[in-house]
Amino acid sequence: MSVTLIPMDDADFVTFTERAVEEYAQGMVASGEWSQAEAPHRSATAFTQLLDKGRLTENHQLWVIRANQRRIGELWIARRHVGAKPIAFILDIYIEPGERRQGHARQSMLAAETWARQNGCEEMRLHVFGRNLPARGLYEQLGYDIASLTMAKPLPPA
Image (tube, rainbow, N blue to C red; front, side, top):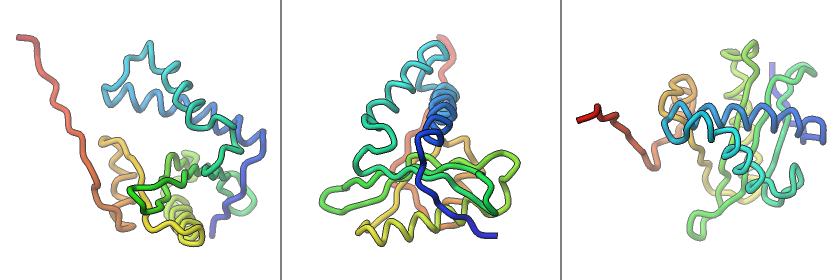
């Protein structure tokens, strides 16, 4: 079964934003970056800044991932530069829980690579939370290496 990337329409964008803002907020809380109280506002603000024109924001591609005509997830890529080199940065890939572990994320990533090559990008990049071991495993299998790494160690009170 193969996946198809379909550009988001307005309704898709609303569904995507609601899910992605909440998921990003919780990821930032789990990583210790934000408090639970501030996370919803900070996450919504970050999305508004990144997607200032919604789904039509320049240099951003937002797709619904479909398999057999079913909506199974979403993919968000921004075209950016690292120095003079054009890159594609995956800001979000989401597969519905009941659709995971079936190869959909892998196929979506490969489709994203094809899109990136066709649009002049020389590299793919992404961020993954350190505790997301299944995603990290997939990315490593697809040839991604660590470009930078932030580590943390909790300190007990003195």
